[in-house]
Image 1: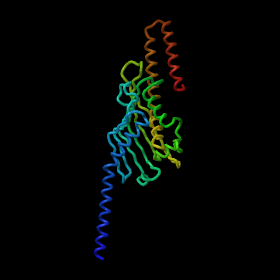
Image 2: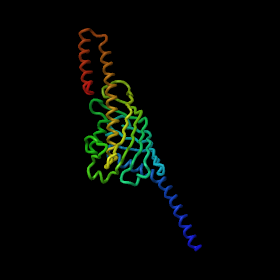
Image 3: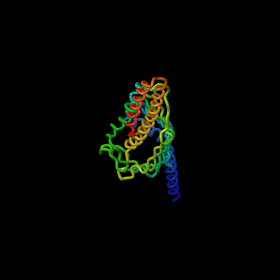
Length: 270
């Protein structure tokens, strides 16, 4: 009887020790697995380089943070900036019990003060538009239904279902280098981007769809903000050019400036 009790006690101790070891292994290796996964999967979505400095995950609390998440420029040789988007640091909160289920429930994703660069023509071709074209090509284009995933059956099978209760991107700054616009690059801040209740339906939302939705909002917001600022700079430049010329020449320049402003304004539906 005593022998049986000893065996049971030893078995319990071994189970506890193995459980602790498993938790430690998850803490040590899961971070590296996720980091490698991001750097492997994300480039196929953006068709650019994607690097991550570090990932820290607490499996017990369901919290995670990602630092140094950088999306490179498409065809980097064509641009001066080393990246298109740098997220700096992002915090994620996940329901621990959902990690091994069919749908991972993400309570919140918070990205603060990401840095974005725009090079080219905000009213035409630029690096951010090309990046968004790449993402659209990967996901098949079209609008994303956040409550019903639009992925193909093959993507459904391959992609993990997600539900994201709250997604906030705040303090995003865009540095713009406009083709044909003299002077140093200028910076603008875009309004906060806030999503709620993404993928609440039975089909959830895939990582690719979530990436597309977030990048679409960030990039369109960045292009619009830069375009508005560029329009203002162009207007001031045109007004300065009017000064010091004859009335006739001034009227001609003014008419052309008005046409330029009107044409640019039409791009924004104004």
